[in-house]
Length: 361
Image (cartoon, rainbow, N blue to C red; front, side, top):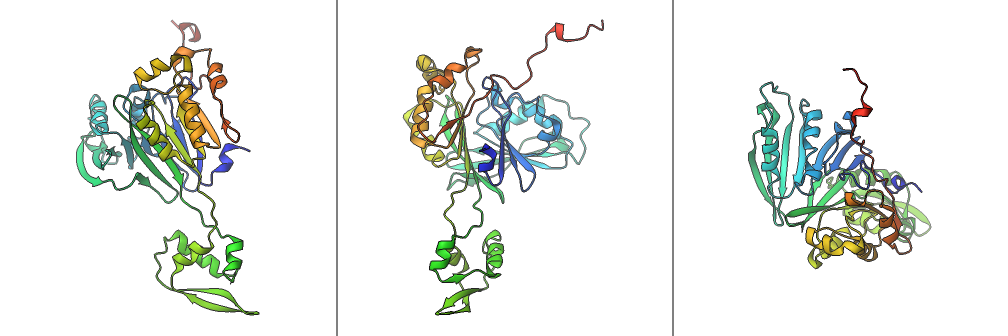
């Protein structure tokens, strides 16, 4: 089975090798748009890939997770669109200072605007950076966080939780919105009979049940089938809907293996279909992982055992393991039902040598 077949709306692509800067691209099939999780080295992504992105989710502002924002802006700044950027506290100021290093004397009124959201444990602060004015940073308001959801579209929700990496580092969960589905057994037990009313119910579902009008359904009445008006349409759907769990993707990178961090990961990532998780060090360098606030293979094995996701993609292995990445997969011990996905060491193009360039001068 192909991994993408497990998702109804999302199409995940990991545009990095095991030792490259992590970058997860999520295309949303129904809309044709996408979101990007982290953007370190991304110059190898095609322009049409970058121009399909509407939202970026940054774990933290270390170079290998954030420096590619310049490349993203380079490919999108002349678009008359607003891009959402989410990250930990301070990300708006860091974005503004990055862009302030360039001259913007040739701006046009149609240039893009960045809407940057700083995610705190208890609130979200939003800033606007209008490209038409050279991307100045302006506070646009603050909203209390009563839940973990920070971003929602018709097709997905994104949740975020801050963890410790000596600085705040966000971990993300992207969950597909529930799709309309009817359980035939529940339908029969309720005495309901299929008909055009199910198409109306489906429209009500996708409209968030905002239509208050009663719904005429078909129900068995002894040996006959008759029409019946149902006032509580949402409640009706809840009694006959299928129990299929929406697919979800978890993204965890650059966090320490403290009990508090691991508890947050287990809580946020419960039930994910695909866990994309850093594993920077092998078990023998556990102490180094602890000092640098990273995970090692023992930590990832613990998370896999607790979460039991169908698929796990280890990533962000330390570059010190060049040509030794096979040891990572040897140390991971997935329980039955869990598949470890493997990456090549590099997907990003290797740096050029002088011998690679034609000698014109």
